[in-house]
Image (tube, rainbow, N blue to C red):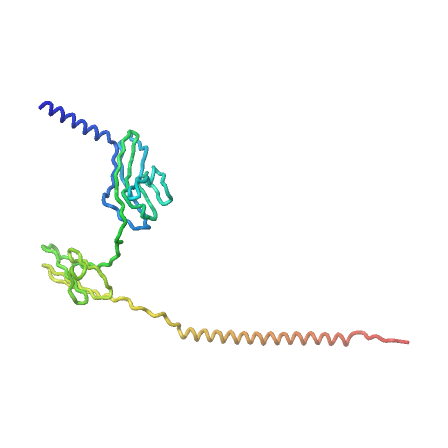
Length: 267
């Protein structure tokens, strides 16, 4: 019995000693595989904790896939212009993801005492990108206390729909819309009574290109006529001024010839 107690004591001290010797912890808060599409930005962030007085001497990111195992980052140093390290090495960012970027990523922290701890997370290539959707939610307020919950039912163009004929949430209050050009009806039924609400949604019609305003064309015609008349008047005035100046200049030359002194010959 004493021998068993001694072995148990030694075992407990060993467990405590091993626990105390590991002065650092590293973990990914979310352990689920990370799905990302080609060409997008990959962000992996780990968390690590140190005991007081510990000093980190090395932080590394590694990736393992069918191409082999490679080191992606050493401390703050990366190996290509698409990869960046932030938050004291705990965050890895890769821009423009390619096929070679998928795989198992491992983040390792080494402290001066020699302890080395790591954690891993898988990065997968997404095969079915998510598609945006538009939904309609139906709700009804209760008056005071109510022992039951409303039961929701939906109609599209007057026809009742179910989970087999349409996409409805688990509680029946939300309907996923597929065609906006329809009429939707929500009916709620509970111990406090029945209520119905209708929404008519019409798809927008294709609008033709606007035609030019005929009145504007008339205005433009009047403006052009006015400009033409003004231009004609300016030309007439310029011609008249030119004729007047020419006539005045020729009159001065004729007077000068008549007043000039004559010459004579004598024998």
